[in-house]
Image (tube, rainbow, N blue to C red; front, side, top):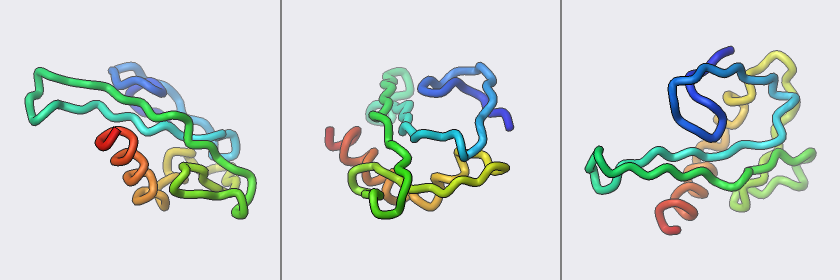
Length: 97
C-alpha cells in the first residue's frame, strides 16, 4: 500500500508501508492550527508508542500496544482498535502538555 507523506512528517512525498509483522511501534503526528488560525501551524510528534510482544505487557495508558502479527495486513490498520487510547495519549501529551 502507498500513503502520501513520510513517517514522522506531513508532506507530499509518497512512501510504502510495511507488513504488520515488521512494525515495532507507532507515533502520533499532529499538524495543528492554533486557535483556528490556519496561518499559525505547529507540528507535534509523539514519542514511540512501542508494540509489545505479549498481552501481559500491554499498557494502553502508557502507550504500549500488543498487536498480533498479521503478515498480509497493513500495519497502520492494526492500531485502529486503539483509537481511544491513542487519542487519550495525544490529549494528555499534546493538548495538556
